[in-house]
Length: 362
Ligand code: HEM
Image 1 (cartoon, rainbow, N blue to C red):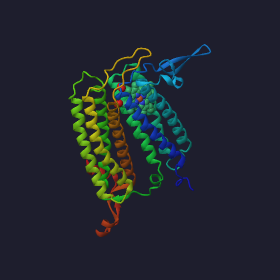
Image 2 (cartoon, rainbow, N blue to C red):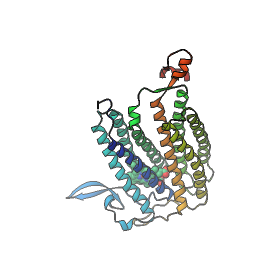
Image 3 (cartoon, rainbow, N blue to C red):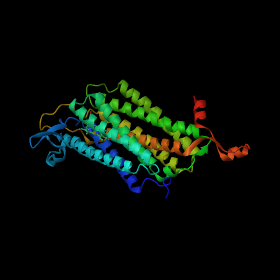
Image 4 (cartoon, helix red, strand yellow):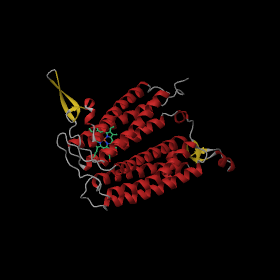
């Protein structure tokens, strides 16, 4: 097999897939920390370990080393926060393995792009760990928690992109298929990613400034109304863009499958959003408080934890699918006149130069 046709190996893709799944679980665990108001149940993060008279930094949970924290203390709010920290520490380790592997295989076809994506993942996971620690140290200021929530989604998108771009079909794709609707499909796919990213940011602002976090905040706020209004734009965009893909690419499962799942998730997300608002309105959340040593916060009901967390998780799946569709659209399709139409018109099939297409679209 020549250098050009050799693909990034199956085991590498399996590791990338494992990182995608582990990141999704980390998002759910992190969302549970916010939903249950457990962010300060473990009020420390960095500590010092005495190593033969030398002070070395270590990550701690309530004074104990993160990995040696006694299991009988994993209760209530401490459980949510400690498990989130442990899991994300494992995720950081997996990401380092991914980067090392991608760099070892960077000379294979697709290897350089995998190395670039994995490097971006490493930068984001380091930033994310730092932001997690910072929000604890600073006692959960909204802006740090919002940034932590948004960086988590960006990290998820990057590892999904890494997995998608190292798939054999993606790497083996020959010249792009010329498609009359190529330009509008590209635009639609890119728009979905942008619209969903904005909605996730608005959602994070609502979660960290709204009544879920601060019981004194009004139930109806600018943050809520903006999140609702943009949510409608997102849902309409999802259905419109996916309908275009169903029409134009109805036999191409690279697009039909993710577009179908995206439509189902958009509908589910509307229901989960209503559910999340309903549990917030129920006032079943605890007022945020800083626990004393050895104290834990009262944990709210299961629905008050699970519904907002599920809403966040489905939002993450939606943007991951939009990223998948966008990457495939830009990889597989080119705007231009398809062969059959060109033959009818007595011309040879031609791909519209992307620059010209861009100029015309301005
Ligand atoms: C890869 C690493 C990490 C990922 C992907 C991640 C993900 C998340 C997510 C998705 C949330 C929910 C955000 C929201 O509700 O808007 C969250 C919350 C939180 N995370 Fe992380 N996290 C990571 C690392 C850490 C670390 C290392 C710590 C602590 C040392 C930490 C502490 C927290 C805290 C305290 C919250 C709750 C913030 C609040 O309620 O205001 N996270 N995390």
